Length: 359
Image (cartoon, rainbow, N blue to C red):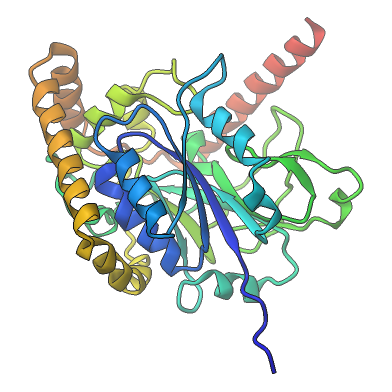
């Protein structure tokens, strides 16, 4: 009896100066079941693009240079291009994510198949971010991210509002015409009634809702089946590089102490991803055994350390570094206060949305 066809799951992402983290991130997602990677790069100074070229030569990924063009941000450029890439006709599932986000499946062996088996009728999963703080680590270290940063926000967070943000893994069945940063875009009205969305705990998820509405209005644990371990900060020194680079989809928005405060939660320890780290270790070793990749990885680490030393001689960067250390971990507010702030935010956003409609 022939073997059933292998489920193909695609990741689409953008990278810029992420060399020290590429191999761990790729090995992790390969180990948990992603088969295809469409990776765009832009303005790389640390050799990330060269690492991606080598990985493409090895048949591990598809790498597309993505220099800034026109008014669109590089992330939206990439998503627009990906929507028409030939690989889109071949894959069964699509997932958009970033290199500081690790999908952590808590079922079975931590594999995509465990997730699909647990909820076979689901056509779209909305995985919530779980904010992992800097774990009190100041210096950049060339060590696995998933092993260094093990403390994070508690379950049931509603504020800061980033705590309810998510990324989506969805069936490539034509229900959506375009990719999006958080949700796919342009839903097909004929197919929409058949779509079934669930969150990371298997609860029904509303999918597309009007702008300004509340997507996750209650304190629920949305991490029971899967979560995104979001290592948005890393060490304090690493944060200086992130601040220098800026956001991929809002390039004019500052990365400052407000960004740090919204993400530096170290209240509970979560090492559930270590199960997947054991699966990915052989693949990571295989990558590091490739001399070209190993050399490029070392060069990216050297570049990052050089940039950190330079930034610490500049006034603005030094004060950001010192104040991030001084601030420590962000306080988790009481549930009543979180709900109050979230309701006020949603009211403000609805008013802004209605004002735009009237304008």
